[in-house]
Amino acid sequence: MANVKNYFQQPRGTNETDNVAQFGGTVHFTGTVTSTVPTQSSVTPNAQIVTATLAEINAGKELIPAITGKKIRILDIDAKVSGNFATGTSVEVEDSNGTPVVALQYAVAALTDGAFLEADTANVTIGAGYMADLTISKSLRIEKTGSDFTGGTSITLMISYQYV
Image (cartoon, rainbow, N blue to C red):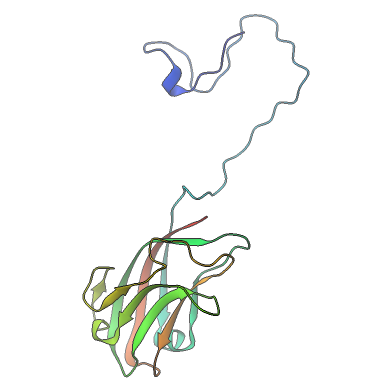
């Protein structure tokens, strides 16, 4: 009986097909043959583009849903601002825990029309939840701090994350 070889175990120049068992005779097997389909795991990054309007930011909006028993790990967040936000203190991207873990905080000074905000942009503060696991079984949200914002139209976020 031949061994099943993966791509890296195959000798160069052979005609062996990746992950195929080749047998040159009779095979007797009394067990069960199973095959599993890979599922989303912590090594599979996800990307989501979400727009939150001024009203949604003031009320709080879910960006990434929770999965029971899983944590969201933020890998990166970029934001594009539409309109000039005023009167509020900051916008936070955080989990939905009662005491939220903050990934990023955007000060009102950063929320100007057409601004493209990355984690290292001026007036953007990296929180404990950036490139870290958020609270288990909690979603990712965007919310205002301080007074309700006025003047701004929306913030569009591109979020790279994993469920772990």
